[in-house]
Length: 392
Image 1: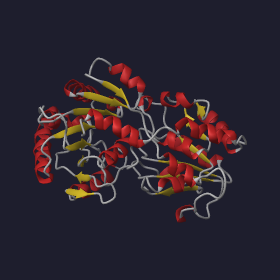
Image 2 (image 1 turned 45 degrees about the vertical axis):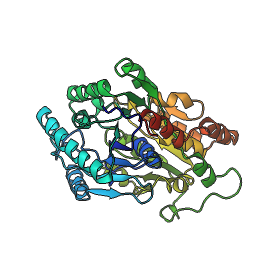
Image 3 (image 1 turned 30 degrees about the vertical axis):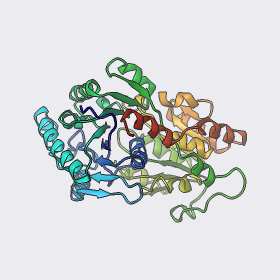
């Protein structure tokens, strides 16, 4: 720890890879806002589990995309001004290899700081496998971006991940939580616990789907689709998405189209085999409101599993800002907005709720949904985190 009262740069040890994962993730949204305040470097994730062909979905695709990412080195995103660094590491996760990767990563981070002339960095950490590298650094402040409970990630070593998370909680100056339940569970394990929640680009979603007048133009990829359009966007992982439910939704929608927007991080072949399902690759957060504006209903067809119990999807506030009905599988994070959305505990109930949502007639619900999230913004979230990081 240094004695400086403020930092001159932020090193964000990321939980996704900028080059192929979902850039709408809360951690990415936060990092791009921090980059407007101080030089910020996003360190691409080094992962938490080794993909095993025959066991892990799209294992060879995961190897190939990471290999391509590693060739990029240090780049700067022209839109946000944030630096992106793809670290060299060994994709093995035994204690000895984590220690080795920690030393290797710490050396690379020191090089990046020297190259960018960052002398007094703070660390924002979203991925527990980067803990050994953080422990070797000198930081003005360390903040644990507590965005998920990674001990429940399938194929990860639960005990080892918790040991890494616990070490990070012990050395951190603060932990920033998006889920109140996780914060309460870990209260007392970290010096300071702060519930930051999520923001939303409220004005953009409202402007794309105004109460009066025409909506924004339909993006080319969504033109000529059979309506109604039921949509989902974001990262799609096998431990999050309920494939069986997605197939049932598609078959229930006749006539209609199920639109999925985002990078393929799982095997979607069974879902895409349905003739009325359309997949659109990742679009930027800035473009997203123009796609979402043309949904009749937004859906969150998540598994009700241990991992999702502590999740808090950023898309819920975006769906509410857009104003249209939202159908979800019930999870703790959705309870706050229970009166404004349709929650289900079974596939049959989900499809019944979907039918209700498609025939919703109360225009006052649009204003109620928007009012519920009107005061949320990513700038406010980033301001809280910037204060924790001692950004001047």
